[in-house]
Length: 233
Ligand code: ATP
Image (cartoon, rainbow, N blue to C red; front, side, top):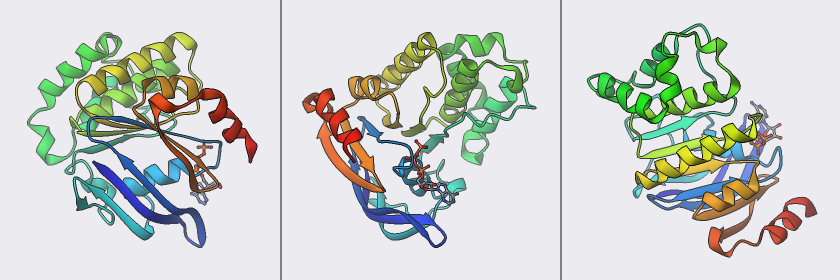
């Protein structure tokens, strides 16, 4: 289980998260939804060690991971697929993937992991030598996902993957998220596409103004009520 307890975090003197607590079950898909500026990305960055924790704790499997620098998170088997893809545009698809297996412990498995990536994302196999900067938005998102998976993480944190993508590509993306969930990975998904996110999730958190407004099992969520809450404040 990935657990965040009473977290306060932000940027320098600006506090963004106020006493945020969440529990993300092992092997489950937890979605975090909320309007722009709610603090969702800041929360993911704090988990990844990219934003300093000012107060509170972050635990993985009962062990504290707050204070762990981002470059050690792969050793904790946690990977983040950032908002906006962030692929290395001047590198080929395959070079981007290899970067995902950069941590020392992963390097021996590069070939095997590349094959697994290409099996899951056949289009990337076709485009393995193409520069990442020339991919379509959908292909770049798939590459970002595949690169995150190169370290074979137990916990996968995905920030707004469907942003700006065509409906067919969004379908493909959610199918892949379902498959990753079936593989038993713990998934934390931040999404603006509330309906799709709730449909695939086990648990839903709604954030607003740097706080958790709602925590509910996805099966108990009534979308109308959720939307009312979402737009109420
Ligand atoms: P979005 O859906 O727009 O990405 P979000 O819920 O992910 O929103 P955050 O990106 O976490 O929200 O932003 C929360 C607050 O933190 C916003 O008010 C934002 O302006 C501020 N913020 C984000 N990044 C920085 C930064 N690097 N320095 C200062 N403030 C920041």
